[in-house]
Length: 462
Image (cartoon, rainbow, N blue to C red; front, top):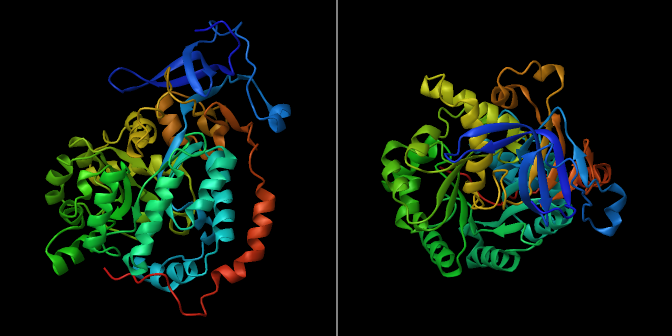
């Protein structure tokens, strides 16, 4: 560890670490030393006691710079990753409630989305990023429209993001072309904090020909793909009845399983799909967002245990706030653990430590960033959150992992750091003005939610 001043020192905390076998462990009375956006050392508080810190920040933020953060009573964790969401859809939070999936899409969401403007997307993205930063999410994978605007918001607010411009085959070849153009023009943006993907919507809205073309483009340009597939069992059953293949088999025959692929939801993955997923030619991962499955009364959930058994990473997600009502990955972590116990009939699966592994390193791998984030270790990007466990709902602490998964809440996150830059300190957001966003979004809502025109961006028919 260099004796020269560090950019940031977080000290006195308990640090969540992964051992050589990727098991969760905790180091007490520890310190994290950050230089140039990278973790230089995870050491003892005593070893870092005399280390000077002068955090490098943009000039306009110097008055709010804290080069040294005393974090006693707090747990330092890798920043959470929301592996699948539609961030701007926070503008539709609570608009389409208590509806089956088909009515939710056709009667409310897709008619409203036909009204979307770039400004609506910008405001939704700002509000979503604020919510995620306050909840300890440092990186999110987004799949939506007008993604140039979302990339601008990410650049400004300091988060990390994996972004894809969604398209349907009903848009013609222009939709696929826009998805490619966005992915190529924004990959590596925001000083490397933005990665990109091609983003066909789903096998039921994108033709086999377009999926095949997407796979070819992904291989030609070295791009991953992010899409919905086998979202629920009804989709799988309908695909089998109409085409004789499952949605996962569609991905296989169109070549998408030979790309680096992030599959959203996968609650309709069945046993015959598992051999295909086990021998993919690329890095295949699945994102699970359990709260939405409960709201839609889907009979199944993502088969986490079966996927893990064949080596497929499963990351945690929220989906969009129009279906999930929040972007709270803490809730996704607790629900994943509880629902897996119920589904498997086994209280030993998922354990709290396994849930933390999915929320950190598994989620980082799901979005293709397993080599740079997801664990607090030397050489990793300094995406760090500090969680305050001094509240009455988290005391006493008999099992720290269980306390984090089943007792802690998003509101217990005190500080959020991305690339060594403090985005929230002591619950104060430093890069986003929420009241201004809420006021402007409120003025635009009547035009956004109008459905009298009878349009919709797509038809849900599975």
